[in-house]
Length: 284
Image (cartoon, rainbow, N blue to C red; front, top):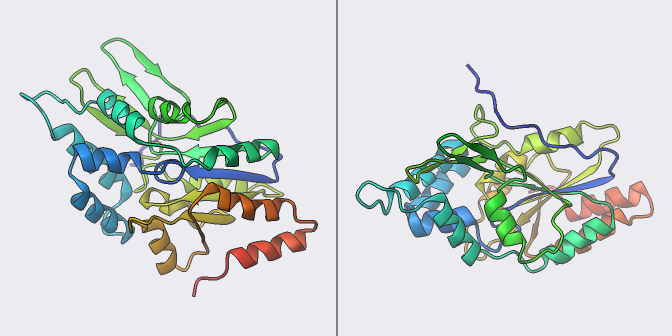
C-alpha cells in the first residue's frame, strides 16, 4: 500500500514566464549541511561518500540512505544511552559553520527585480514533538535555513521553501518525515517542477542542484544548472553525464545570472531558444 504524505501541498506561482527552483545544501550554501553534520557527528565522510555513490548508481535510494545518515548522527556520541547530537545541537553547529554562496544575494535580488519567483527545494522542515504540543513551522527547513539566510538577506518573504519535516522527540533523538514517503527519493523534487511544466503556456524552469537529492529533478527542468564541486563530490554532474541529461555547470550564482539574463531579455522566442540550445548542448 502506498504511503500518503501528511505535508501540505506547496503554493504554485501562476502567470510567470520564468521560475527558479533551487536545492539548498551545497548549492545555495558553500557546503552541504547534512554532509557536514554526518561527517562531523555521524558515520564520517568516507562512509557517507560511499553511500552517496551507491545512491547515484541506483544501488540504494536517497530516502533510505538519508535516514541511515540521520540514524548515525543520533547513535554516535550517545552518553549513557542519551542522545547528545540533538537536532538543536546540529542546528546550532550548522548555523555556526555553513555559509551562503556570497553571490546568491545579488542573484536573488535580480530575480525579485525581474518578477522571477525563487523556490528553495530542501530536504528538511522542522516539526517539534513535545508531550502535548505539536507545533508546525511552515517555511521549510525553518530553524536552519532561516538561521543561515538571516545573515545574508534582509528580506526573506519572497523565498518559498518546499521540504520534508524533521521530527524531534523528548529523548533528544530526531528523524525525517518525508514529503513523498512512497518514493525512493523521499522528497521527489520533480514533483515541485511538474506543475510548471504542465502549464499552458509553461514557464521556463531553471533548476539549480548539486547532489544525490537532486537526481529526480534533473530531467524535469527546462534549464538545469549543476554546481561544480572542487572537492570532487559531483554526484549530480556524474549522473547527468552517464544518463546524457543536458546540464550547465556553474560555480557561482553571478555566473548563472549572466546566462539567465541573456534568456529573459532575448528579443524573440527564437533567439531565446537558440541561447538555451547553445548553453545546454546535447551530452555526447
